[in-house]
Length: 259
Image (cartoon, rainbow, N blue to C red; front, side, top):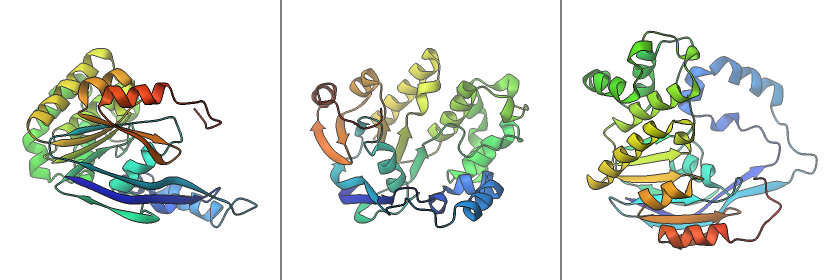
């Protein structure tokens, strides 16, 4: 379902990245993005130096597999999902993805703070590629899964982070996708809801759907994933059974990278 060959991504240190904003960010924060571009246009580091967020990453994921992507902060995990989600273009290499993709990369992405939960279900669903008829058909399931019935007509800015996580995951989980990308979005959820999300992911895997899960929770990676990949400074440091990759991660030498 996913084939990645020689994927690389280079950034200039200090360069504004507004050009790589997600469609949802453009829709929700268009005004602030425009101002930011005017203020920071052309800003670079004094020495014009570059950093490679990804360096020659290659792997394959078969149908029905769940790949856990682990590594220290700054190792390239989120950049990898942004490239695979077509949010930003790679500097080199390419990726092939078969099937409809659903991505949940940041809490609250695609939500408008002044719209109600009900309105944001339709907004977020549309951003993820769902048609209005599809959203309407699944609306009751989405709301029930998110457990926000009482607050459905409350503006989303009054929701807690956990409530936003529940609603965002519920929308993404009910999208008819073949491939799902998740980036640490369940970290803010409470224990019971996370267990329900994990059960949903297990069912999706049983149905032959494919997923990439970026997480710092090793127990989740080991229990949910069929394979795991360790990223180390933008490169693949280990690949294989989750327990083996987790072992490599926990025993890697300390570096000066941000944590």
